[in-house]
Amino acid sequence: MKKIIAVVMALVMVLTFASCGSSKSERDAISAKIDALAQKLEEVKQAVQTAGNGGADIGGGDDVGGEDVGGEDIGDEPFEDDVTGEAITDNSGEAVTNSEGETQTAAPKTTKSTTKSGSTSASNSNDPSKWTAAQIVDYYKKAANISKQKSSQTMNLQEIPGILSPLKGIINKALQNNSAPFDGITGGYKSLVASDLTAANAKASGNYVIINMNAKEQIDGAYGKSTEGTVGHLVSVLDGVATAVDALGVPAEYPEGSVKLDYKNAFAKNIKINTKTGQIESGEWGYDLYITLNGAKLSVITIKNVNALLIYRVQYPAK
View 1 (cartoon, rainbow, N blue to C red):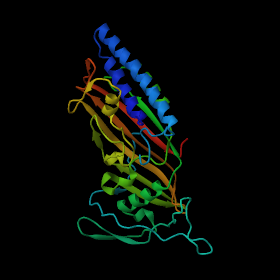
View 2: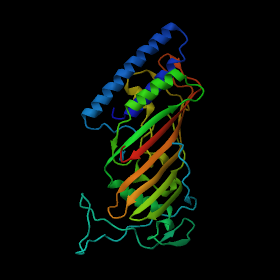
View 3: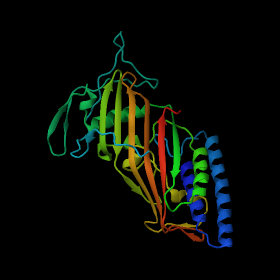
View 4: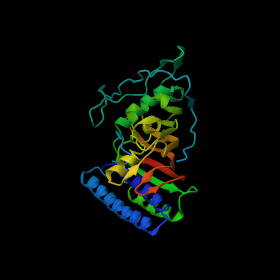
Protein backbone atom coordinates (compact mmCIF):
# COMPACT_ATOMS: atom_id res chain seq x y z
CA MET A 1 0.00 0.00 0.00
CA LYS A 2 1.49 3.31 -1.09
CA LYS A 3 -1.42 5.50 -0.10
CA ILE A 4 -0.73 6.20 3.58
CA ILE A 5 -3.65 8.60 3.87
CA ALA A 6 -6.09 5.83 2.95
CA VAL A 7 -4.67 3.69 5.76
CA VAL A 8 -4.95 6.64 8.14
CA MET A 9 -8.59 7.04 7.16
CA ALA A 10 -9.07 3.33 7.81
CA LEU A 11 -7.72 4.04 11.28
CA VAL A 12 -10.24 6.87 11.59
CA MET A 13 -13.03 4.44 10.74
CA VAL A 14 -11.85 1.81 13.23
CA LEU A 15 -11.48 4.35 16.04
CA THR A 16 -14.92 5.69 15.28
CA PHE A 17 -16.43 2.24 15.20
CA ALA A 18 -14.77 1.49 18.53
CA SER A 19 -16.88 4.16 20.20
CA CYS A 20 -20.01 2.17 19.33
CA GLY A 21 -19.08 -1.07 21.16
CA SER A 22 -21.65 -1.83 23.83
CA SER A 23 -20.14 -4.84 25.61
CA LYS A 24 -16.71 -5.43 27.10
CA SER A 25 -16.04 -8.31 24.72
CA GLU A 26 -16.91 -6.13 21.73
CA ARG A 27 -14.66 -3.32 23.00
CA ASP A 28 -11.81 -5.77 23.54
CA ALA A 29 -12.22 -7.15 20.03
CA ILE A 30 -12.20 -3.68 18.51
CA SER A 31 -9.21 -2.68 20.64
CA ALA A 32 -7.25 -5.57 19.17
CA LYS A 33 -8.22 -4.42 15.68
CA ILE A 34 -7.01 -0.89 16.46
CA ASP A 35 -3.63 -2.19 17.67
CA ALA A 36 -3.22 -4.33 14.53
CA LEU A 37 -4.21 -1.46 12.26
CA ALA A 38 -1.82 0.96 13.96
CA GLN A 39 1.02 -1.55 13.51
CA LYS A 40 0.08 -2.01 9.86
CA LEU A 41 0.12 1.75 9.36
CA GLU A 42 3.69 1.90 10.69
CA GLU A 43 4.72 -0.97 8.38
CA VAL A 44 3.19 0.80 5.40
CA LYS A 45 4.95 4.04 6.31
CA GLN A 46 8.33 2.30 6.58
CA ALA A 47 7.83 0.43 3.30
CA VAL A 48 6.96 3.63 1.46
CA GLN A 49 9.96 5.47 2.87
CA THR A 50 12.27 2.59 1.96
CA ALA A 51 10.97 2.65 -1.58
CA GLY A 52 11.72 6.37 -1.78
CA ASN A 53 8.08 7.24 -2.17
CA GLY A 54 7.33 8.83 1.19
CA GLY A 55 5.02 11.44 -0.33
CA ALA A 56 2.84 9.13 -2.37
CA ASP A 57 -0.17 9.41 -0.10
CA ILE A 58 -2.88 11.96 -0.83
CA GLY A 59 -0.74 14.43 -2.77
CA GLY A 60 1.40 13.34 -5.76
CA GLY A 61 1.18 15.28 -8.97
CA ASP A 62 0.58 12.32 -11.29
CA ASP A 63 -0.76 11.93 -8.30
CA VAL A 64 -9.55 24.50 3.40
CA GLY A 65 -12.90 25.95 3.44
CA GLY A 66 -11.38 27.34 0.35
CA GLU A 67 -12.78 30.73 -0.33
CA ASP A 68 -14.32 31.58 -3.66
CA VAL A 69 -11.53 33.25 -5.58
CA GLY A 70 -13.89 34.69 -8.15
CA GLY A 71 -13.07 35.04 -11.82
CA GLU A 72 -14.78 33.66 -14.86
CA ASP A 73 -18.07 31.92 -14.20
CA ILE A 74 -17.83 28.57 -16.00
CA GLY A 75 -21.14 28.16 -17.75
CA ASP A 76 -20.92 28.46 -21.53
CA GLU A 77 -17.58 26.67 -21.38
CA PRO A 78 -15.22 27.37 -24.30
CA PHE A 79 -13.51 24.53 -26.07
CA GLU A 80 -9.82 24.39 -25.23
CA ASP A 81 -7.71 26.29 -27.76
CA ASP A 82 -4.00 25.93 -28.46
CA VAL A 83 -2.62 28.75 -26.33
CA THR A 84 1.05 27.93 -26.70
CA GLY A 85 3.06 31.14 -26.94
CA GLU A 86 6.23 32.02 -28.80
CA ALA A 87 9.56 30.53 -27.71
CA ILE A 88 11.64 32.68 -25.36
CA THR A 89 15.06 33.49 -26.82
CA ASP A 90 18.30 34.81 -25.32
CA ASN A 91 20.40 37.75 -26.59
CA SER A 92 21.94 35.56 -29.30
CA GLY A 93 18.54 34.52 -30.58
CA GLU A 94 18.77 30.94 -29.27
CA ALA A 95 15.70 29.36 -27.67
CA VAL A 96 15.77 29.17 -23.85
CA THR A 97 15.22 25.67 -22.46
CA ASN A 98 14.59 24.29 -18.98
CA SER A 99 16.56 21.56 -17.17
CA GLU A 100 14.67 18.89 -19.13
CA GLY A 101 15.55 20.44 -22.50
CA GLU A 102 12.03 21.76 -23.14
CA THR A 103 11.73 25.09 -24.95
CA GLN A 104 10.22 27.78 -22.73
CA THR A 105 7.42 29.91 -24.12
CA ALA A 106 6.02 33.31 -23.29
CA ALA A 107 2.34 33.95 -22.65
CA PRO A 108 0.35 33.12 -25.81
CA LYS A 109 -0.69 35.74 -28.32
CA THR A 110 -4.20 36.93 -29.02
CA THR A 111 -6.53 34.05 -29.90
CA LYS A 112 -10.21 33.47 -30.39
CA SER A 113 -12.18 31.01 -28.27
CA THR A 114 -15.16 29.18 -29.68
CA THR A 115 -17.87 28.44 -27.13
CA LYS A 116 -20.34 25.58 -27.20
CA SER A 117 -22.97 27.99 -28.38
CA GLY A 118 -20.87 28.67 -31.48
CA SER A 119 -19.97 32.26 -30.65
CA THR A 120 -16.41 33.53 -30.72
CA SER A 121 -14.74 36.03 -28.45
CA ALA A 122 -11.33 37.63 -28.88
CA SER A 123 -9.00 37.52 -25.88
CA ASN A 124 -5.76 39.42 -25.55
CA SER A 125 -3.52 36.57 -24.41
CA ASN A 126 -0.78 39.00 -23.44
CA ASP A 127 -3.20 40.12 -20.72
CA PRO A 128 -3.96 37.07 -18.52
CA SER A 129 -7.01 38.82 -17.08
CA LYS A 130 -8.63 38.37 -20.52
CA TRP A 131 -7.90 34.62 -20.76
CA THR A 132 -10.74 32.15 -20.95
CA ALA A 133 -11.01 29.37 -18.35
CA ALA A 134 -9.67 26.91 -20.93
CA GLN A 135 -6.60 29.08 -21.54
CA ILE A 136 -5.98 29.42 -17.81
CA VAL A 137 -6.23 25.66 -17.34
CA ASP A 138 -3.88 25.01 -20.27
CA TYR A 139 -1.26 27.46 -18.93
CA TYR A 140 -1.53 25.96 -15.44
CA LYS A 141 -1.18 22.36 -16.67
CA LYS A 142 1.99 23.16 -18.60
CA ALA A 143 3.48 24.88 -15.56
CA ALA A 144 2.49 22.05 -13.20
CA ASN A 145 4.06 19.47 -15.47
CA ILE A 146 7.55 21.00 -15.16
CA SER A 147 7.36 22.06 -11.49
CA LYS A 148 9.20 19.36 -9.53
CA GLN A 149 9.92 20.72 -6.04
CA LYS A 150 8.30 19.12 -3.01
CA SER A 151 4.87 20.08 -1.71
CA SER A 152 3.89 19.94 1.96
CA GLN A 153 0.47 18.92 3.22
CA THR A 154 -1.55 19.29 6.41
CA MET A 155 -4.65 17.40 7.55
CA ASN A 156 -6.84 18.30 10.49
CA LEU A 157 -9.96 16.47 11.61
CA GLN A 158 -12.60 18.86 12.92
CA GLU A 159 -15.26 17.68 15.35
CA ILE A 160 -18.86 17.40 14.26
CA PRO A 161 -21.53 15.92 16.59
CA GLY A 162 -21.21 12.15 16.30
CA ILE A 163 -17.45 11.74 16.76
CA LEU A 164 -15.99 11.74 20.27
CA SER A 165 -13.50 14.38 21.44
CA PRO A 166 -10.91 11.90 22.80
CA LEU A 167 -10.74 10.19 19.42
CA LYS A 168 -10.17 13.48 17.61
CA GLY A 169 -6.82 14.00 19.31
CA ILE A 170 -5.64 10.48 18.52
CA ILE A 171 -6.68 10.76 14.90
CA ASN A 172 -5.12 14.18 14.35
CA LYS A 173 -1.84 12.94 15.78
CA ALA A 174 -1.88 10.07 13.27
CA LEU A 175 -2.73 12.48 10.45
CA GLN A 176 0.06 14.86 11.46
CA ASN A 177 2.64 12.07 11.71
CA ASN A 178 1.80 10.86 8.22
CA SER A 179 1.49 14.17 6.36
CA ALA A 180 4.74 13.62 4.49
CA PRO A 181 5.93 16.02 1.74
CA PHE A 182 5.60 14.75 -1.82
CA ASP A 183 7.16 15.58 -5.18
CA GLY A 184 5.54 17.98 -7.60
CA ILE A 185 2.05 19.47 -7.86
CA THR A 186 -1.02 17.90 -6.29
CA GLY A 187 -3.93 16.48 -8.27
CA GLY A 188 -4.43 14.79 -11.62
CA TYR A 189 -3.77 18.09 -13.37
CA LYS A 190 -3.07 16.41 -16.71
CA SER A 191 -6.79 15.60 -16.87
CA LEU A 192 -7.99 19.00 -15.63
CA VAL A 193 -10.46 20.77 -17.93
CA ALA A 194 -12.41 24.00 -17.69
CA SER A 195 -15.66 22.10 -17.04
CA ASP A 196 -14.18 20.85 -13.72
CA LEU A 197 -14.25 24.42 -12.41
CA THR A 198 -16.79 26.86 -11.06
CA ALA A 199 -14.46 29.85 -11.33
CA ALA A 200 -11.04 30.74 -12.71
CA ASN A 201 -9.05 33.93 -13.06
CA ALA A 202 -5.53 35.02 -13.92
CA LYS A 203 -3.61 38.28 -13.74
CA ALA A 204 -0.15 39.54 -14.63
CA SER A 205 2.19 40.67 -11.86
CA GLY A 206 5.63 41.65 -13.12
CA ASN A 207 7.31 38.53 -14.52
CA TYR A 208 4.58 36.32 -13.09
CA VAL A 209 1.07 35.12 -13.85
CA ILE A 210 -1.11 34.59 -10.76
CA ILE A 211 -3.88 32.00 -11.14
CA ASN A 212 -6.88 31.17 -8.92
CA MET A 213 -9.34 28.33 -9.51
CA ASN A 214 -12.29 26.71 -7.73
CA ALA A 215 -13.43 23.14 -8.50
CA LYS A 216 -16.94 21.75 -8.57
CA GLU A 217 -18.09 19.65 -5.60
CA GLN A 218 -17.19 15.94 -5.78
CA ILE A 219 -18.88 13.07 -3.92
CA ASP A 220 -17.23 9.65 -3.62
CA GLY A 221 -18.25 6.46 -1.86
CA ALA A 222 -16.13 3.80 -0.19
CA TYR A 223 -14.00 3.37 -3.30
CA GLY A 224 -12.30 6.09 -5.31
CA LYS A 225 -9.17 7.18 -7.15
CA SER A 226 -6.93 9.95 -5.85
CA THR A 227 -6.60 11.88 -9.12
CA GLU A 228 -10.08 11.37 -10.58
CA GLY A 229 -13.12 13.63 -10.48
CA THR A 230 -13.64 17.39 -10.58
CA VAL A 231 -11.76 17.87 -7.30
CA GLY A 232 -9.27 15.05 -7.87
CA HIS A 233 -8.04 16.76 -11.03
CA LEU A 234 -7.22 19.92 -9.04
CA VAL A 235 -6.35 18.55 -5.56
CA SER A 236 -5.73 14.84 -4.88
CA VAL A 237 -8.51 13.08 -2.97
CA LEU A 238 -8.62 9.85 -0.95
CA ASP A 239 -7.50 6.76 -2.82
CA GLY A 240 -10.14 4.29 -1.69
CA VAL A 241 -10.81 4.12 2.05
CA ALA A 242 -12.50 0.75 1.60
CA THR A 243 -9.55 -0.55 -0.41
CA ALA A 244 -7.24 0.26 2.49
CA VAL A 245 -9.48 -1.43 5.05
CA ASP A 246 -9.90 -4.51 2.86
CA ALA A 247 -6.15 -4.78 2.26
CA LEU A 248 -5.56 -4.76 6.02
CA GLY A 249 -7.65 -7.89 6.40
CA VAL A 250 -10.30 -6.23 8.56
CA PRO A 251 -13.72 -7.79 7.77
CA ALA A 252 -15.88 -5.00 6.42
CA GLU A 253 -18.98 -4.38 4.34
CA TYR A 254 -19.96 -1.17 2.56
CA PRO A 255 -23.62 -1.12 1.56
CA GLU A 256 -24.40 1.50 -1.06
CA GLY A 257 -24.45 4.93 0.53
CA SER A 258 -22.87 3.77 3.80
CA VAL A 259 -19.69 5.77 3.13
CA LYS A 260 -19.97 9.28 1.72
CA LEU A 261 -16.95 11.51 1.07
CA ASP A 262 -18.13 14.97 0.04
CA TYR A 263 -15.35 17.29 -1.20
CA LYS A 264 -16.42 20.91 -0.99
CA ASN A 265 -14.77 24.32 -1.46
CA ALA A 266 -11.84 22.88 -3.42
CA PHE A 267 -9.43 25.55 -4.57
CA ALA A 268 -6.03 26.41 -6.01
CA LYS A 269 -5.13 29.96 -5.07
CA ASN A 270 -2.27 32.37 -5.56
CA ILE A 271 -0.59 30.01 -8.02
CA LYS A 272 2.47 32.05 -8.98
CA ILE A 273 3.92 31.07 -12.36
CA ASN A 274 7.20 32.53 -13.61
CA THR A 275 6.70 33.61 -17.22
CA LYS A 276 10.41 33.21 -17.97
CA THR A 277 10.79 29.61 -16.74
CA GLY A 278 7.17 28.54 -17.10
CA GLN A 279 7.33 26.94 -13.64
CA ILE A 280 5.10 27.34 -10.60
CA GLU A 281 7.03 29.12 -7.85
CA SER A 282 4.40 29.03 -5.10
CA GLY A 283 0.76 28.30 -4.40
CA GLU A 284 -1.84 26.79 -2.08
CA TRP A 285 -4.44 24.08 -2.68
CA GLY A 286 -7.11 22.57 -0.45
CA TYR A 287 -10.69 21.50 0.27
CA ASP A 288 -13.16 20.61 3.03
CA LEU A 289 -13.91 16.87 3.19
CA TYR A 290 -17.22 16.02 4.85
CA ILE A 291 -17.20 12.37 5.93
CA THR A 292 -20.48 10.53 6.58
CA LEU A 293 -20.51 6.93 7.83
CA ASN A 294 -23.94 5.33 8.17
CA GLY A 295 -24.44 1.60 7.73
CA ALA A 296 -20.86 0.52 6.99
CA LYS A 297 -19.89 -2.62 8.90
CA LEU A 298 -16.50 -3.30 10.41
CA SER A 299 -15.97 -6.59 12.21
CA VAL A 300 -18.86 -6.92 14.69
CA ILE A 301 -19.82 -3.24 14.68
CA THR A 302 -22.19 -1.32 12.39
CA ILE A 303 -21.51 2.40 12.32
CA LYS A 304 -24.51 4.71 12.27
CA ASN A 305 -24.84 8.46 11.89
CA VAL A 306 -21.20 9.44 12.32
CA ASN A 307 -20.01 12.69 10.70
CA ALA A 308 -16.63 14.36 10.56
CA LEU A 309 -14.92 17.19 8.71
CA LEU A 310 -11.34 16.88 7.46
CA ILE A 311 -9.53 20.09 6.48
CA TYR A 312 -6.86 19.46 3.85
CA ARG A 313 -4.18 21.93 2.68
CA VAL A 314 -1.23 21.70 0.31
CA GLN A 315 1.60 24.25 0.11
CA TYR A 316 4.12 24.54 -2.73
CA PRO A 317 7.01 24.58 -2.30
CA ALA A 318 7.09 22.58 0.93
CA LYS A 319 7.44 24.65 4.09
